[in-house]
Length: 129
Image 1 (spheres, rainbow, N blue to C red):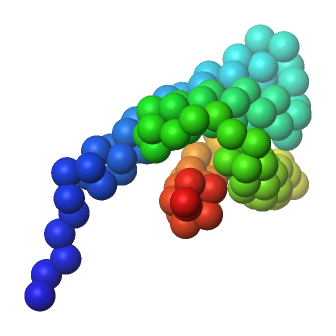
Image 2 (cartoon, rainbow, N blue to C red):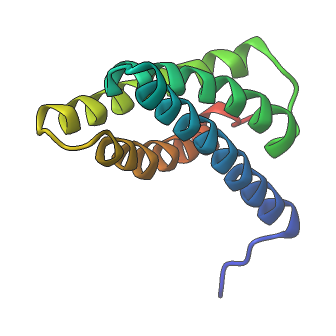
């Protein structure tokens, strides 16, 4: 017996990926801008970028990906997952800086790790009914 993805599930996954790509783009643009134009440290830039990208992600995922309403319970869960993601973001960025890598290496680590973690956590917990 093979597992299949229904059209509503595929739509949700696709929307989540688009929302994640949009939020990731916001994160990358803000980090790069802060580092290159304001000489902000990569760690601080990633922190600011993460907060902005998280606000974007919450609105897109709640209202569009999961067709949900803005609720305190969902906001609380989203915030909890996001704080864990922020910890990952800061840890990855700090490690790259400590190792003397360019901010792009740290940013790549953040982009490759945090969205995957967030997707799994939000799918399993934040938007669970």
